Length: 518
Image 1: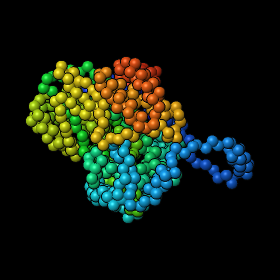
Image 2: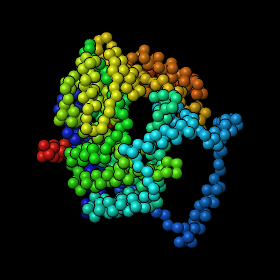
Image 3: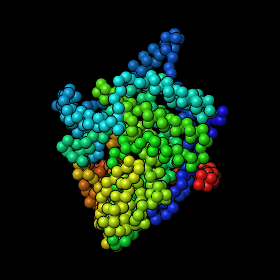
Image 4: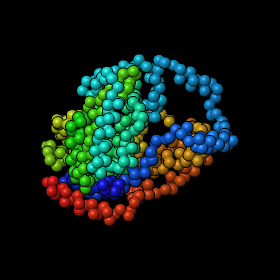
């Protein structure tokens, strides 16, 4: 049996990229370091705890330690709520006809009538393509099936016995479904985003394990956008033609739209482009197949099985969805390019949000989007375009008269002042550093001093509304103002630069593998 470090390689090869760098935002052609050293999974300690009654000395020890803890003086935190506010919270908690949830976007707290909440959940769960009612609890049966997969992994030397114990929970809980209201799509009768809370569930450990391997693949995709800073860094200094359009696309209901066969095919193809052993690839696919086909959950007092898509809430769901769309992008840019593809440049994607530049007419753009929507992947794209500006994530991009792209902060209309209140019972250093982080974020996003000053003024007012001291606000503002924006856009340093040699070795391995596949 190989060592644990052999089972989780330190580096991973980049899957095949797109052929034309003009189409790719920031074209990522270097091999990504996976950081798959395996230590994260080697060192998981057993959760088994022996009964204290087995040993009298242990029992006495626990009693003595407990008494010592009881002698420690307790500093009771002062209540930062008035009696009226505290009473109001208790009364709200006792109301059965409302459901209190955070909004899907915008940081709001939403009081959702329970009848409306349950009606929206029923509407989604009646979709026989995605969900199926269960008449029994399959937990014991599913646990046995997972144990068989893991035992095979141990026999083949893919995982150790310690990893087996971690990946198979002894007393798993049943996952539950809840909805987050999408009030940005409508304040009256808003749709809900389904989230499966799988904490301590049967699939939670294997989903984390799967994500450990898929994340490096996702980060090496040519279209991959890590975050807002990554987008700003790549668009910095870009000059566009006079007739260029900024276009954003959104993949509708991505997580529930991915057919299991299509998603597994995408992951398999990308795994085969790495230097993982065949047994490791097969083991990851078996675990992923189990996680997809055994995702059952409770809503109310009814059990459901998800038969299409992946659970939003699973640790591997974003990476899985990224791999799926990565294969689709590979098809449209390399294998089966649609007409007018040559009019696309700077294509980048943050999970299901796509940004690109269009060098054609509006009618041609419509024709191009129709072709993208005519696919065998069950993908449906909606899009917006702008000749002078376009919002993407939390940034408003503007095309200036000289063709250069400027950026400003974008906030949705439904966004509220959700900054943590200064009197919140959090550590004081944490609260005092919130203004610093927020003003630095403004400086990073705003491409001009004028934009920054406008946003800083608005941010100052919002901090004052939340009880922050003017001294802390001014200090944070000055620090951000005096920080060069280029410093905030710099590429973060690699956590483990010593892996460079291993990365170079992985490049050759993966290139040879791709050549043999082609």
